[in-house]
Structure formats: C-alpha cells, structure tokens
Image 1 (tube, rainbow, N blue to C red):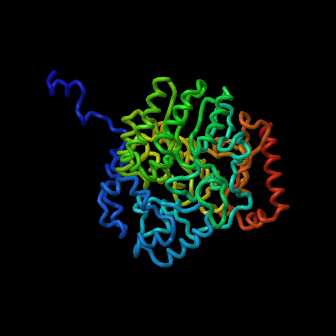
Image 2 (cartoon, rainbow, N blue to C red):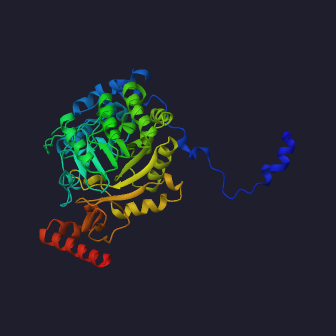
Length: 464
C-alpha cells in the first residue's frame, strides 16, 4: 500500500478530534533529566571532570561529614551565618551527618534554606522545631518484634533483615536513628555490624519459620555491603525453599547512582543473585528511596537503565516531608520523574515519629490530599500508596484507613487486624499544625492522656 493510500485509510490530522489541548513539551520535563556538570558549581570541585565524579570511590572519599568540610567545599557559596546555623543543627541532630558530593552539588546554593535536598541531609538550627511529646527513637518498636538481633518479624510472612548499620549518606529523618550511623551528641546507638556470626542466627531463624516468604535486606544500606556479602546473603536466602522473594533496600540510586555505574563487581554480584532467583522463580529486586524530582539526573537514568537491562526490578519508597515533597506539584513531579527511568512508585510514608525531625513531619490529612490529587494522573501501578507505618508496631496502614482522626488534636488511630489483632495504634500530627491551646495541652501529661484516651475510645466505637 502506498503512503497516499495509507493516509486515505487512516484519515488526515485535520479529521482527528483532539479532546484535550496539546501538551507544551516544556511541561514534560521529566523526560530530560539534567546532564550538566552541576557539581562544578561547588568551588572545591570546579575542575573535577565527569569521569572522576562518576567514580563511587571518589564520592565516598569526598563525602561531607562536618561543618568544616562543608565550608571548605562550598567556600563563598553560602554565608558564614548559614554555616554557623549548620553547626548548631549538627549538634542537635539525632543522626550523624554524611552527604555525598553528588547531593551537595544538586543543592540550590542561592536558596539553601528552602532547598528540598538540603532540608533532608543538612540540619540548620534555625529551622528545628521542638519535638512533639510523643516522638521517640524507635517509634515503630522494631526492637520489640526482634527474635534475634537485627531481625524484625512483624508481618506473618515477612521479615526485616538489618544486615548492617551504616549508609553512604545519613538522612536526618531516619526511622532507625536508634542504630544507624555513628553516635551523636544526642544519641548513643545500638550496634548492628555486618557479621556472619550475627547473620547466621538470622538465617537459622528464617529457616525455622516456614511461613516466611518475603525478606527485606536493609539496615543501614545494602549499598554498604561488599560484593561478596551480597552473594553470601543472596545465595543463602535462595537456598531456603520457603523464601520466595527478597529485596535489597538502598537509598543509593537517589544519592549516589555512581556506584551502579562504576562498581562493576557489586552490580555483577547483584545480577548473579537476580538471575539465579529468576531461574528458580523467585523475585529479587531493589527498593530505593527518591524523595524529590531534584534527585533525578542523567546519572540516575543511566544507573536505572543498567539495572533494567540486567532484569533487576526497582521500586521506590518515599518519605513525605514538609518543605520537600508535600505539595501536589512536587509529588506529581517525583512520581513522573522516577517512573520515566523505570523506578516504580510503591509507598509514600507519612513521616515516622522520629525525635529531632519535627520540622520535617506532615499531617495525615496532607497525605490524603496528595493521594487524591495524584490518583489518576498516571497509571495505577505507577501511583504510590500513601501509608502510615503505625507507631507501636502495627505495620503499614493506608493513610486514610484510620478508625478515627481528630484534626483538632492531631490524633489518628489505626487498627491492624492481621498484624496485632485488637490493638489500636495512634499517630500524631506535628505541633505546628495545631492551635496554640492544643499545642500547650500536649505538654500537659494529664491533658495528653485524656486526648489520647478520647481518640482510642472513639476509634473503638467506630471499629465495632
């Protein structure tokens, strides 16, 4: 059939009824992740070429861990007042601070106070808020559901394997600030070092529990496992007949994609485990942690393309944070940006009740609003579920599935029948979202007990 004949069959452009206006190409920004030498804006790295910057060992060596290192790297990009503000933030943070050159280069240094990446990794004293009285270091009670050190068995068929306690960067909002990273002025950590002796107890427990089909290897960050340790853990889990799927949890793709591009031994080890799993009809994948579209670059795309070519599935778990991703626009941009590079949006967590992070927390209502606006903007499988990881060990619950929610006191109450039957789990909105009278009431032990008791009683009535 000739081109003219084909055109006659299909019809001309003028005959097509366009029900929607044409999209401005500039509005599809996620299809063109940045590939400029953004790191060269940092004075200390102005002469660093792309090949050097792409080496994961260079990224590790040049990580920022103190205000002095920060000042030496950025020099006059930020004011001395900002540096002093960071010093104050470091001193009050429950997490040790470690930020990769990659992330430091992505920060908007013309407006660092509002930058979403800076907010996640570099605390400033002037923005810290007093903790809600109900905040703790282990709000999820992972340790109380731990039959052996470093393993949490909460869900019937799933366990969390904390393989180690270090990361390539330290997030201010880490839900495991009780263990991850170095001791700080505020927190002395428990130790979960990478150790075959400790791991052997974990493997024995998993082997002894035939109901366990799903294992999350986390920590800490799986990026910090050596290639041989990826093989040791992966092959051991694949050897257990009833383990059907497991995932290596790493924030690495979001904060240091260079490891995927330059640590060939590590990627080959992961590929070996994935390939074996596929042949045995078991799923092996990566769960990663992008929080904003600003974290998605050409490096991210190249790293995810490599994993996609290797047949390795990647899912994303976001933490909802004030000033980072809590607007309709920022959450839409994040979901579209990671979907485009074959990272599936999976969860958006309402921020855990972690001490020292009140300035980052958001309300349950904000999660419901964001989910409502995001739903329908893209395919369902590329739309994340917004969840509250119920404080006290209830596990993940749909954010809007509360039994009761009092927006005046900020208390939402959840049940988890398949996890801990007959228990009620309360989440608390940040103090800033409440009236001054209610904020004051939360600091009164008697009133605090009354508010929580009323919420639980109302939840019990609704539940029945």
